[in-house]
Image (cartoon, rainbow, N blue to C red):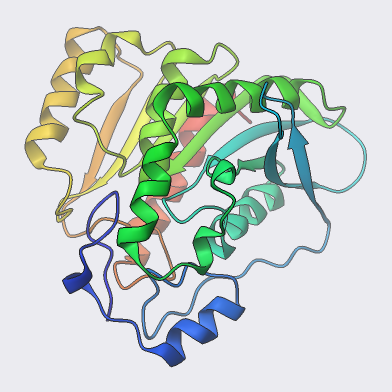
Length: 282
C-alpha cells in the first residue's frame, strides 16, 4: 500500500499506485498521488448543507477560490478555515468541510494553489507537485488566509467573533502561522505540519494552537516536537500544546491513505472540537 510519509510528499520509492486504483479514486475526486490501494474514505452526506464555491477578493487579478460548506437555513454560525495538504482541494478536504458543517460550522477551504492554473488532485507525480506548492510563499498564503477571514466576516451566515482554523500536513504549518498573523483567528488546530521554521516564532502566537502529531512521522522529528513544546513554554503560551500519538504515522487523519489510523484520527478530531469549544470557536 502507498504511504505518504513526509509533510511535503513522499519520495517515489515510498509508494506505488496501480493505474486501476488511481483511475478509480481520480473519478471519486481524491488526490491520486497519495491514495491507498485499499482505501475506503469516509463520505459525509450533504443533506441539510449548502455547498458553494466562493471567489474571495485578495488583491490579486483573479480572486481566491474557496470551497464552502455550511448549514442550510438562516442564522449565523462559527467559522473554521480548512487548510489543505499539498494536493489542493480534493475530495478528502471537501469531506472534512462537510463533517464540520454537519456540526454547525461554516467550513471554508481556500484554494491556496489556484495561481498555478493546474489541478493538483489530478497529478500523480510528487516531483511535479512540489514546485507548484513551493510557489505558494509564506506571505502570499498568509495574505490569502487574512482575505478569507475578512470575507467570512462579511457574510450574513458567519459569526464574526468565532473564527478558527485547522490544517493538515502543509496546511498544518499554515495553521500555526495564521495564529500568529491573523487577528480574526481565535484558535487553531494543526495536524502534523512542519515545525522547524516555526519554533523560533513561538512567541508570535496570538491565540492558542493545538498540534496533533504522529510519533512515527518520518518527516517531523521528535526533537522538533520537543523543541516546539519548550518554545511554547518559554514564551508563556500556556493555551497551546502538542499531542503525540506514538503509533501514528504522518497523515494519520487522511482516510484515503495507507497511513490512516482510525483511533488516532478519531481522538484527534475530538480533541480538535474540544479545543475550539474551549477557545470560543463554537
